[in-house]
Length: 134
Image 1 (cartoon, rainbow, N blue to C red):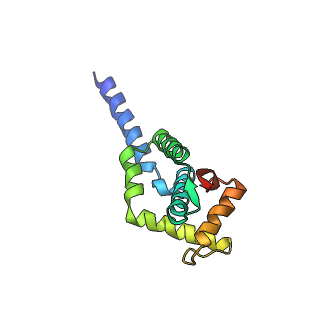
Image 2: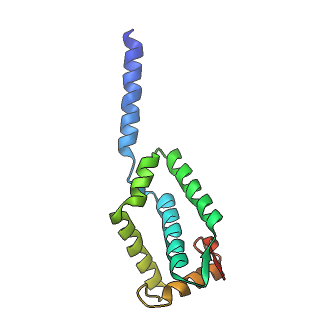
């Protein structure tokens, strides 16, 4: 009787230490990079009249990221917390501003976000794959 209880206790301890060892989702590059890609494509789509989003492709990417995060041990509520967090949204905005600056573009300059969108589409990048020019 004691052996099964010890086995269960050991299993729970391992599960708890594994859960506690998980880094924040924003520090998991494959997930954070995927969210960043979707966020940038969405910003471009919303702000550029001559660029549309590939809605079904974007939804598919969101589902793929969620499934991968689940495989890594993150719950849907942990994923949703990142997506709903104003702090996390600002991190993604800052990352986007830095990305644009590296390309010689300025988020606050009219037209530069659309220039980025056209550049991403022409490069067939991960961001560009979620967009289409009208």
